[in-house]
Length: 261
Image 1 (cartoon, rainbow, N blue to C red):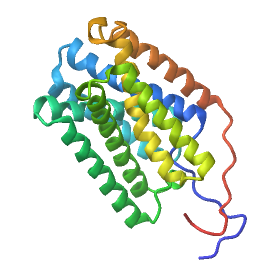
Image 2 (image 1 turned 45 degrees about the vertical axis):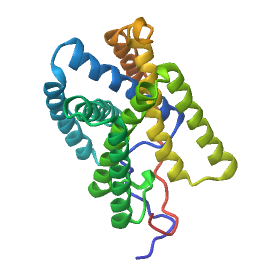
Image 3 (image 1 turned 180 degrees about the vertical axis):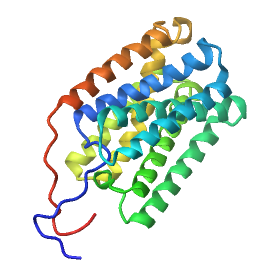
Image 4 (image 1 turned 180 degrees about the horizontal axis):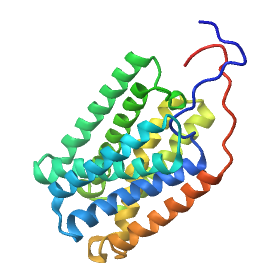
């Protein structure tokens, strides 16, 4: 099939990677950690009931997301916040309810994510987030997102709790890792897709560590703000940023440059 310079790709269903993208993502993962704790512990619903309830809400949110056929900030980021909460709950259930070690869950979700990428690439010949045009590609995308949140939760808890580095040190460690990855991209021309997904994974334990630092009691190494206050602070930031993106002018479609990706 021949494409001309006037041919256009369908609208991408997920956002471009911008400063706002990373800010909201970081807020979402932090809220995912504190909101999951608030629902399961503070409200007394427990992990099982909370997991069932939040998974049901996530399914509805993803249904709306898939129905859009394009990127709609409010719908997309609602799904991200919910999948952040569910990803946290998946790991917490495996560790607390089923007794799996954090080492096991970290390795398990690493393998699950790698398998998702392998099948995704075999089916689509790309892992690019700039060409999420079909339901199948979007399905792979959200499955990968779920595993990144679950993996990030497991890895963050492993470093902070099992390795006993604490919330602040863990946050600094993963923050430094993200900075090193960014440097490798800009200075060493590291593959953009690889950089994106590694950074996406590492922002989960980064955000969760600082979320725990703010919300946990002082005797457990936190600042004692509590899960309610911490969750609402980050939710407010997310709402402001999503409103900004909703009102922000949408760039014109990108012309297809002679080949499909």
